[in-house]
Image (cartoon, rainbow, N blue to C red; front, side, top):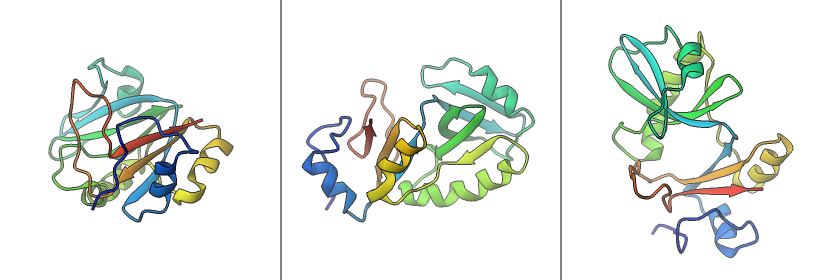
Length: 165
């Protein structure tokens, strides 16, 4: 059974739902940097980065110039202080746990030559305090069994929850 909030929202750290998520094994915590959310399109001809609204994110594209992949793949992440932090591979089949497994070797290969990194997974109980100590925006709690959610009308999903300062 999935543990779901009453509605998609930025979580109140003092709320009971936040406390339940922290102790539920199907949720993971990732740091939320205060960068530009962007999608990186990667194929045999190179890499291009775009904001969620479709604007070309030139600094990221320039920094990743020369990055290729044998077939087209799209990476979801955040451009922050000159580095692309990848947290998902949206068009891959499967739940978050399965997509993350596919993402690790791809990002590891790219990180050898380019400013790209995989968003780390943190222990949920200490994640928010760790984010604050590093000067980050907060954390995102994600459900392991979540399939990627595409929507132009709704910007949030109940299975990705932001926790901000």
